[in-house]
Structures are given as C-alpha cells and as structure tokens.
Image (cartoon, rainbow, N blue to C red):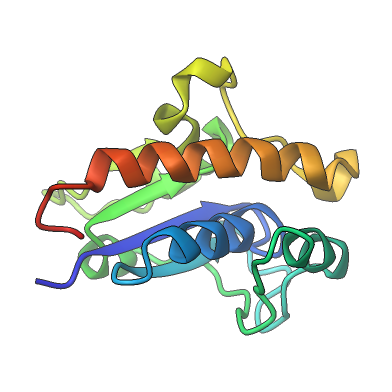
Length: 151
C-alpha cells in the first residue's frame, strides 16, 4: 500500500513545502505533497529564504512547486496536515460530504513543543524558528507512523 500525506499552509511557499521536504527526508518511502489554501503562488518554487534555510539543514526543496488545495485532495491523500487553524478551517470547508480523510494540525505531532500552529516565516522572517518546530513535528509524525503499514 502506498501511504500519501499532504501538508498544507496558506501560500505553499514556506511552511508546507518545508514540512514536506523535512518529512520526506525522514521517510522517503511515504508519498508526500504540499499545497496552499490560496492560489497566490501557484506554479512558483518555494520562497528563496526558506529554500536557503532548509538547505542549511541538508534538505533541498527546490524541486517543489506551489499549488492550491482542492476538494479532490481528500480522496487522493490518506492524511492531510494543516499548519494553522485558519488552514484547517479553509480545508474543512472543501471537504466532500461523507469523506473521512483525517485532517489534523501538524503541531499535533509535537505536543511537547507547546505550539498551537507553525508560525508563518514569510511574515515573521524567522525561518529557523519555523524549521525547528517543523523538524519536531516531522519527527513526531515519523514516530506515529513507524511500525504501521505506512512505512
């Protein structure tokens, strides 16, 4: 079985591509994608400063390209992870009737960090701080999936 995870943020140029890149480095056998709740940056590569920050951690996300989240993603993925409550609300609004694909906050996988969301470094400029949290969340997700049919 192929397990598919979708990481979602607002523009799909900072948080969600970084989460996808960090997680695929940990679990390359799991299929991952990322998307944004907006189409502002559709077709663009991840934001340059985020790419530079991930490269410093040994993760290259330059191959990723922004796209907008669509209702069909509920059928295409086994787990959808939003970076903040606004993302979750926007995603949930598109959920088809009867669909039960799990939708969770990415930070649910790192409760010890005490963060309710992954802050958007596009606005805060704290790329390293966002990546620190993303790394913790990715490790927690990895631990949650290890030993299951997903790995």
